[in-house]
Image 1 (cartoon, protein in one colour):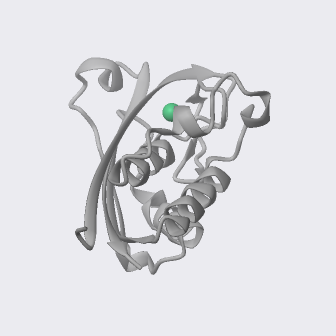
Image 2 (image 1 turned 180 degrees about the vertical axis):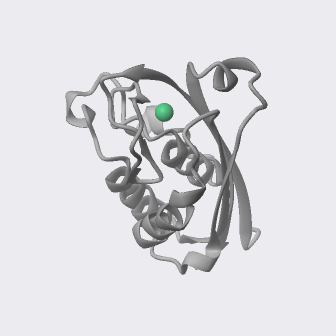
Image 3 (image 1 turned 90 degrees about the horizontal axis):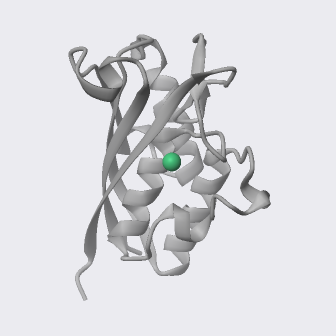
Length: 160
Ligand code: MG
């Protein structure tokens, strides 16, 4: 078997009033937040799907069903720790991770370092192995009109 595996993840959440905005485990001041069963941390969800996908272990909907009350309001960083434990139990560890979140507003640049630190801490790797990028989609589509945010992630896993 190969000693490296690659995975990708993608997620979308709707932006609504009356919710906290949590991205990469960081609460970001904004007039709206992402809607979901858990804390709806779209960035962290894409990361978990990439890690699970690398080992063909399904997706977070399979591991943490959104109709399970146990995950109502769940802190996605805690779920990321569980995913990390799962891949370690399979004999793998994260090599590196690269994630991009698309949002028209708010400006995410001031929070990027903190997001990288939170993800790195949850996964147990150096911050230098975690890349977080943010982009707008030039006012186009669901991120552009402010109705939602999307995130894509790619990760490399290495055999322990
Ligand atoms: Mg999600």
